[in-house]
Amino acid sequence: MRAGAVITPARVVKSLVWGVWLILLVLLLWRDFFVSVVDSRESAALERDRRTEYQGIYFKEQKIGYVEYTFAPAAADTLTLHQRAVMDLNISGQSHPVDLDLQATIDQYSRLQAFHFAFTSPFYRMTADGTVSGSAVSFTLDTGNAVIEDRLSLEAPPLLPTSRRAYLLDRDLQSGEKIRIPWFDPLSLTAKSSLVEYHGKEKTLIHQRVYQLHRFTEQFAGIRVNVWLDDQGEVVKEESPAGFVFIREPEFKAKQMDHQSPELLAGVAVPVIGAMPEVGNKTSQRYRLHLPETAEFTLSSGRQSFADSILTVTRETIPDDVHDQSRPCADGARELASSPYIQTDAPEIVTLAEEIAAAPTSPTDRTQALADWVYQNLEKRPVIGIPDALSTLKSGHGDCNEHASLFAALARAAGIPTKIAVGVVYQQDAFYYHAWNEVCLNGTWISLDTTTNQFPADLTHLKFVEGELQEQLRIGALLNTLKIEPLPD
Image (cartoon, rainbow, N blue to C red):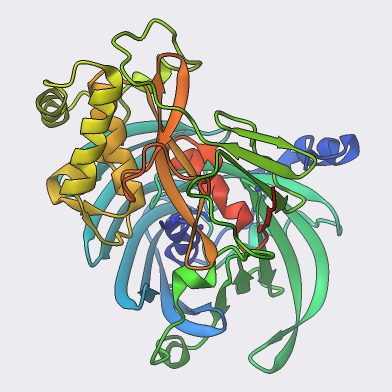
């Protein structure tokens, strides 16, 4: 499972791989929600000279890639920005070279006007083209197997975070002050608003040298990213809780790669406190969750109940032979709908669902038949990219995200309300980030995992969020902060 911040290739990896966060006190709620949205008219214009800058990308203190930024003046008070990120990701012991290329037009206040984005990894390619009108972003995504069109609305015209962020210094913020900034991310094609807080200047050690830099923290979906700027507002260092660090470097150093990059999935695995019991024959299992203070998840859902930091997971009972759906599930109608990435109404999806589900007579049997087909017909390999059902069907391979997306589309087309669940699953002495499904069978949501062929899913599947990519990004708040303690009976 991959899962990751916003718009530039330098930061896009954070939302790419992850991929995939306590209620605040009244005072903190006031501070966090009654803050100003950045007014780009107060922002300083970017320099109009042509200039190229570089950042090295590190994971667990080892170089895994670099980012190249080129700014060039264009017509009518705009800039053309070209950003390219090159990375070599070690996933399950295999090298996955990744290339991200963004060409964007921005105005003198860093507001996005138009973009073209291309992304290539070993088993995935996509391009996306978009334009901004006011506070709305319209875009077209082409995966080679599917063309997806969508439109997203933000609270204000979206900014493009680049290696130059002088607009954060121009507001003369005092330590502890916050502002809200709307972004659009062309990799995940999602919109968000982040909360940026200024912490003043501090001494920062970078490559054995001490710098006096301005520190900001950016929070979005529970993820907290640290950013250090020099007095000119240029990014010198940026780090995420997942262990990714971006550092401004000269070209020769930025492009100098380590021979072996650290294993990515193991680097973000959730540690287990104590021993993990055998759950195969159990009907329930309890876990003590050590969550970050910023975590805001609805953990009591379906087979899960959560109280006093204890999560209890109870195995579901699958109906033997339910021939009707007289008892609806909450949100069941919504979970039958088609979406840009769960293309329930695509002819290829509809035809296949009808073929697979033609013989079984009950919803339970149809669910099992669909789950069996996805498990048996998708080659299981890590895919770094945006999962959508139609592309997965045509390519014939994918990891947990692709399995969950394709099953959701097929099941919905067969009239079975289906969700995508995202959380962690236990494997090889740790919990790893994972995606699976839930289906409504006669009034009850029941879990199933087409990647591991489990119906229902075992008691080590712990759900934190549900929904598509915009919701799934919230799982990033748990990276390197979540700890799980299995409890005895």
